[in-house]
Image 1 (spheres, one colour):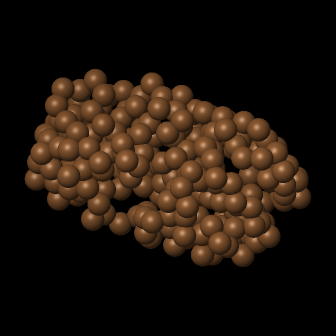
Image 2: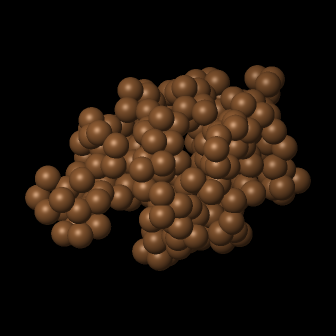
Length: 240
């Protein structure tokens, strides 16, 4: 990762006034949260059922106890802290340059770093609701509960406000994402393989000046990128 490309990225940021960030699991790996698809990610580990099956709506409804066993053990990281990428994005938003963070992550680290306009395509672990009376509960309540978390009001089962396989994305989050991306003069894609649809298809709405791709591995959008950086996103942002 040479200084020239970082300098080019810095200058492009200076030029732009409507930046949107589109990120995936690679943004949180430097905070100690494993991604799903890397060689040592969740999908490569062996369980009684494949992780894709466990984090599906059907599995959640039919085997709720086993869902929560996996969910609490492998998908919750309450002690994780934002890294340089999260912090820099929050800083750029404060400066008025960055207008939105669009994330496929569910860990809430962008909000923890101070970002305000965070569009969570796949929901977030910090919000949980009773499927019976719809009372909301925080992450701490779920973490501290034994087995399947139950509502302290009506006894109903609590579901995390995350998008499981077989569930649709939130239409209002999608429309706000499209609106931001369509207005952006810079779209930064970071820490994502861009293979999860429909999320990855949202970047087709970008028609601005600079498409920036930052990722460890190649992505389907590398050839279209005006600025392409192969590296860890936290390291890249720490040099801005």
